[in-house]
Length: 322
Image (cartoon, rainbow, N blue to C red; front, side):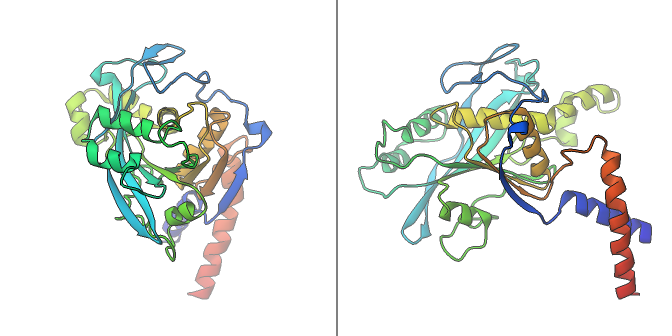
């Protein structure tokens, strides 16, 4: 029983440390370490994307009616549901249906003051879901459309798990202005006017990985190596690359970084991968747990330091509750 408790406490301490860190990326981490190298500017808002292996044509759609909500104190938000087509394998990008994945993101925009003639009002009234709505959305926040609108200040949220989708606005995530304890409402209050809630590939409304979806692609009893290779394309480096696609599509200037990325639990591990592989893509990083060892040469060093502390905490627990 004690060994089982020790195991669970170890897992919880590794994955859910109650630590909150905010920092600017140090100079020694701004260099790409080759975990997932792509040349700067390989994706642009218009036309095909290209990386080291050749061109890849992405698609970007808004797949639900875009809606506006009041969040109190005279503030409004616009919630839009986006789907991006990304390469399954960024090292070998292909445009065929079985070589791409769909990645979903819910975007929350804090709107400027409304008027009946504003571009936002016209957009909400005019566009049905589809590619045209996505194109209109990108133009909506361009300075040419709203010259007096505040500059976009974006925050990307990376969910924990792995395997969980991002929270849904107004369902699992409060956006109410004033008095709310959610990180999202706090972010809006602190000046961020765009929240990007990405369902990491394989989760939520992105292309899922389940026994049922795998059985559509593979013989589950005979293609274990192919299945393993396929699932290896759903790890942190690919999640980071998907986030880069989303960043460069949504931002008016594809070279402009995320103003902040918030990594929760496993999302913190993805954020660490982001920081060490995509120099200049993130201005500020927030970790809420999920901080991997950044200096240890061997994971064993981390466990050698951690396990005595876990044992000590176990002993204290049984002394307190014999």
